[in-house]
Image 1 (cartoon, rainbow over the protein chains, first blue to last red):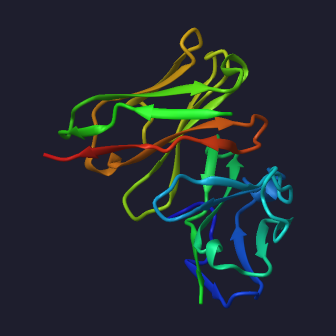
Image 2 (tube, rainbow over the protein chains, first blue to last red; image 1 turned 90 degrees about the horizontal axis):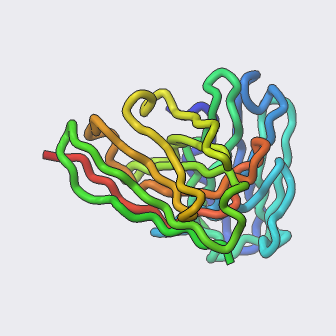
Image 3 (cartoon, rainbow over the protein chains, first blue to last red; image 1 turned 120 degrees about the vertical axis):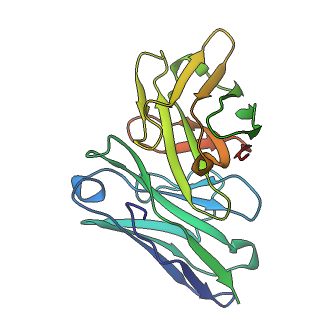
Length: 111
Length: 119
């Protein structure tokens, strides 16, 4: 059972928009800690996708965007491409656990 | 270019020990906090442990506290994870990652090393 809750899967057709939610609690996202997102392509290591709720590291396409409100955060992907098919994880810090916490991951399927 | 290369994984019996290493290059290692994250087969990511740049601060997930020890040798630009009293549930790919500091996540990840705990 992950501390942050994500939907197990989402899907969309090429060119469409999808969103992935990440729900936390008052000890992590709700306490003001930033949410970060990682993309994990099949068989590879995670890659930093979104930092500090909504910032894209250099090289990340602007099709990816993040937001945060209250105890939740979201990752949005517009103009879906086949290469976006991957697992996506949200991550924050939890003051009760004194460590990082991850969501369970969301598998994105491009139809 | 930042590079993180893990090594030391393998097959170990329950109750056994293993030491993982992570060789770092392409950035100032001595001022960078570092983190270990693991991923059990077919499962999600789990934070394991973190260490400050100086090595003076160490942090552990409850699931490994008292069994795992994180350390670093700044003269060798290398991060370590000493794993003792290993259990079947410790079976996972272990990734080292460069912590961006200030609760800012992991900017760079290694390719990981597989640890299998089985008799």
